[in-house]
Image (cartoon, rainbow, N blue to C red; front, side):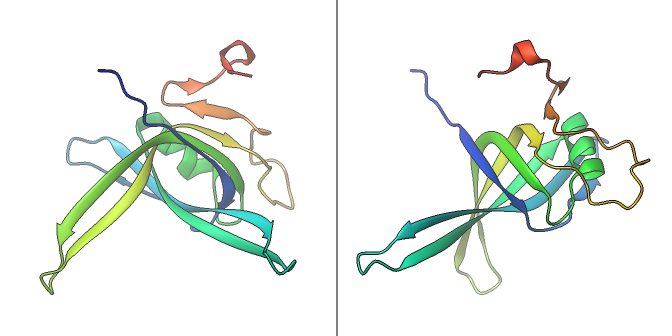
Length: 138
């Protein structure tokens, strides 16, 4: 039986990406992203709620996220949900969900006084590298 596990999030990067390497030498980058939604409550008051996600990117995508993303940047992340559980030091079972990214779209430019940093304007990257216009689903 075939299933589907796909998440798409647009939001603000909440932590600077952290890149590390596995013992086998594969790069992995993780960061947090916040997605907010506004709504009107039953009493007519406008409210906003924010959901935080942990994102993990691997290999070339990990290197690109580490290079071009920073806290405060806006990004689109597409990937799959991965759940982890472990026993804490207090004996309680802990749970964590993360998005394993397979595509990231940088939605804004890095705030920089000089633009000589080679920042790509709003480009989309997948695990295989930059995507061409013909590769986009819309």
